[in-house]
Length: 213
Image 1 (cartoon, rainbow, N blue to C red):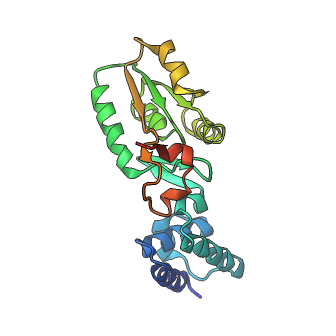
Image 2: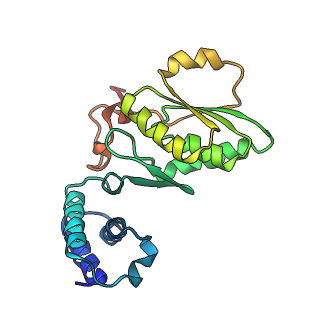
């Protein structure tokens, strides 16, 4: 079976499962399994039996509403490619608006000190550090596993401009009071018991739910 046929069949399967973007998901999973950029799928020809089996397994995982990012272990955020997986919040595209606002507010500061609380994968921290050349960024995360993902991404991307901290935000705030140019946070804010999409429910509860209110 050709790649085109394989993706077409997978898209139909994902559509039957009720996924909102079946064709996109099918292409992203195919590119992951084949180890090529999504835009080069049209140039690929036949696939091996092992690749076809791996692809089918990935499609079935997606049918069970496992996030694409957990299957591929990659999340795209602005110009970054971040490692993610179970145990860390998958960064959302709408959070990029926060980075836009922050970079605009820091435009006149050559070496701003930025603290990113509840950093998760360190998406915000790394976007700021890589898009503002002089920024010094501290990324704070209280959860052990999420902190591990943050450290992995910082080691791969930041080049020393981001420092990670395994700590509760209430401990760090007094230490930096009066010295920080900007504080960012994408904290858990969904009320306990509120409806969330199945994919969002795969995010860690600690990163998603903010309490009864």
